[in-house]
Image (tube, rainbow, N blue to C red; front, side, top):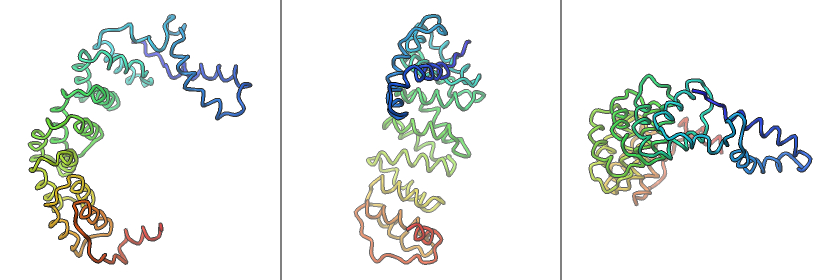
Length: 274
């Protein structure tokens, strides 16, 4: 497929426009302020390089979602910037595009960039079909890679339907994945099974400050005794202490006398920063 570099053509258009209109402006900032208007004009002007069509409606002539999604893959494969107008057309086709975007997202041999793009489009379209795929990434991955993190971001927008499969996935997930799953489940304070998971992570995770922030977000005051206990841990570092103290306050608890952290490397670094 012919992967036209829309960005390159727009840059050429702007250079020509700048030469022709430079005298009208007092400075570069004033000129740059009009670039959005220039872009809109460019979108709606017929172009020889698009056989007389405008950049704004070029992809509107294509109704085959499978064809357009393959075109998207070709753009990425050839390392040509993907036109926003192509992405917009894929999302406009809605239901017809979903299975092809799912195929791209799940295709292990595909480039990470195009898989990430497919995930982003599915999230923009507010589709729930990828839910099982994203959860499988969380449950099976030894480490949280960018695909799993992007999928997790999409799961946050899918509502309560994610609770049961995430709780199941949590049982066999890696430590990093468990923290990510817990972050998503914190958005459902009515789900009582989440708090025991969070308190368990306080005992096992190396990211104590992060888990404390999740507990604060979850907002269940039943966590207070465990959080107060954590504040008294003689081995606690300054950063963990601050986040746990914040969680205690968020849950309605009170902090007694502040502990001294003189000599703690985190405390000393913060003190030097003022």
